[in-house]
Amino acid sequence: MRSKYYISGLIAAFALAVSPLFAADTVSLNVGKDGSVRVGEKKITLEELGALAAAEARKDKEVNFQVAVEAGASADEMATVINICRRAGVSHFALNEPANDNAELQHLYDEDQADRQPAYAGKPVDVLALSRRDDERERRVKELYAAGQLRTGPDYYNAAMILQHALTPDDFLLCHDLCVVAIGKGEPRAKWLAAASMDRFLVSIGRPQRFGTQYGAARPGFPIRLSPVDTTVTDRLRMELGVPPLAELKQREAKMDALFGQSNQPSKPPASTPAAVAPPAAEPARPPPGLAGNGLANIPFVLGPKKFKAGDAIVIEQVLANSPNLAAGDRVVVRGQYLLASKERATLLLALTQPEGAGRESVSPAQMMKVERGTGAFELAYEVKHTGVLNLTLYGFADGKPFGGVYFGTKPQMDGIKDWTLSDYEK
Image (cartoon, rainbow, N blue to C red; front, side, top):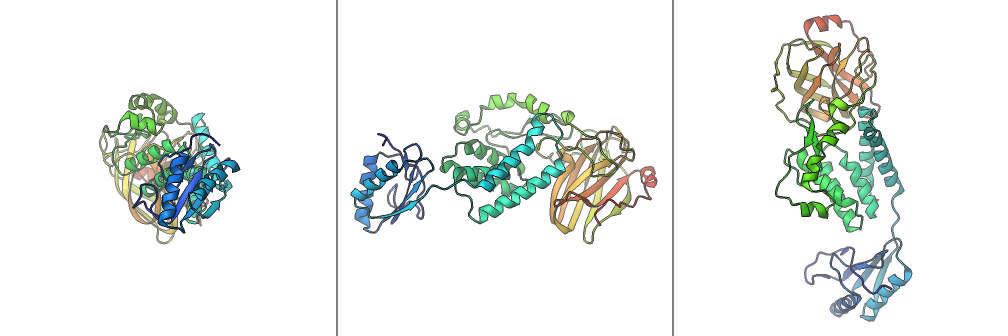
């Protein structure tokens, strides 16, 4: 047995109210693999543990000590802790065997990370396929969470990392909560992720991040920069959570832009349908509303072929561009409303269909958004680089197939495709 011990674990069923360490007739201890013992977050020696156990036994003869043993802790260390409490007058014990890491969560985490590795090597990543896989992983993680299948520090960390790649503020908050639990269970990797998930949540609701883990482009085509940071947060607090100093984070902007900037995105040849576009390698913050600046103005447009499932619709309210041609070299912003009734979730994508399929395309995050059943507003941006016709298309999460959409552009452009039947859309 080691000569010094500290306390680590959870007060299982009761809030602290009377004593700073124990408050009721159930006390949870955690025997660590490093020979440590924890009660709450307070460090005590074995002698202090004995004194506290004696005090609890005097207050309640039926007090129950729940002893959890981490994987790797020796039987001798566990027996020493129990014997100290027994000699102090505690007679009721419940022993929890070390929990095994959830193999399915580890597999989901490994998949999540593997899907993102090509981006760091400068290789194309299919953003639509990645979005579908992310969505499936997120749903499964939430099922495991609801079923109580997260038990160990690595379980909570693996689940949190997958939710960090979701798109909603609620998911980022849950990710942060899971990180807090993972830290409490001794998972050091969760410290940085706790900071990153809080930053991601704040950025997603339009507030400055606290720690400086999030980068993004203010507008399509602009360089990637560190998102606004709360200057009241100190570098010491960042250090405690495994985040570099703010000055170093600022210096990383060039590297982030080289990895994920739109001008550096890999691409692949598209086919003749809106589905064939190469996605971005990263997920920078979505651009804020108000993209009508930077030389863009309202332009007239004509609707072309469209096809939707019953109850679905895309209503284009405004098209802004730096010329009325909607042709190569133009920057385009489209605003409007969507109605989704045929599916629970979908991806709405602003893209260019090239009849000849001769150009190479990449997709900016500003071109796409996840939508859920119901109605909502959208603002999507696109830089036209090749000859073709613009469209707004809905893609299903289950299979990634287009199932509805509308073409728009100048009158000559729409006259040229008036016979298109959109047969590639899901029947």
